[in-house]
Length: 296
Image (cartoon, rainbow, N blue to C red; front, top):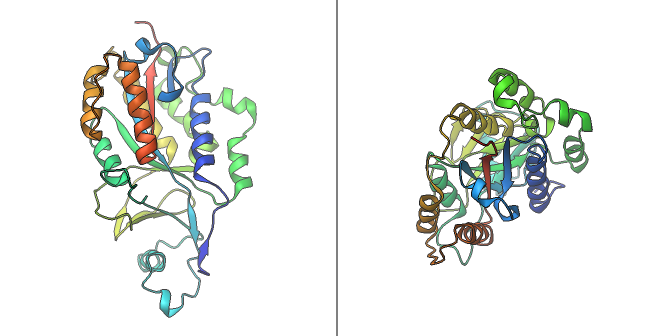
């Protein structure tokens, strides 16, 4: 279609880069809070289970649309043409329009990935989100990822051991917003269930003007830095609670029930790894944990 702009990026590339980046900005030295992929956590599981927040990611490739392109009559009722028309009719005119489509139901899955994400995000002790870059260009993406090395250290609220002692939340928030890679990704939580994958989210290159098609305008800042800041601030402000809202046993029981998986092993870490792999293989959802390394 002449009005479509294809991305130069791949979903696997985006997942790898974002996972690595989030792990990098919560490093092993001078550490306090860490955000790790569950399938990469080999040691220290007991500490991981003390105080944690599960976060589920579905990584998407943004595709583009030309808002002013001439659309042939035979394409006017197609979903992508309707996206252009809806945005133009409601004065959300950006060039390009960015969007992604929901994932088709996998043969081995019992429900759409979108609905699984929605239910996971509905629980107060965890979060689930779609993440997509706000660019179609591979070089622009690489430039955002490979920012000058000293900015990663200077403008990084997670890298200092004394984060909770000396830094105000206002300072942390300001620094977190300065990270280009986080500013240039959108993070949209699934906001309703659906019976088909034939729906799209569209948004501007700045990360604003998010619209669910069909026909719902979502007025909120959905950039990745804001999503992570909200979680980090909540984690930080509730530091006096030395344990999670839910203990690891309760969490694993909940997740098994949600995914309709039954494990008899007494090993919690084995269960967590198995469920993480099941989420990835069946629904293409990546599980990460934000956890506290502080010795109370």
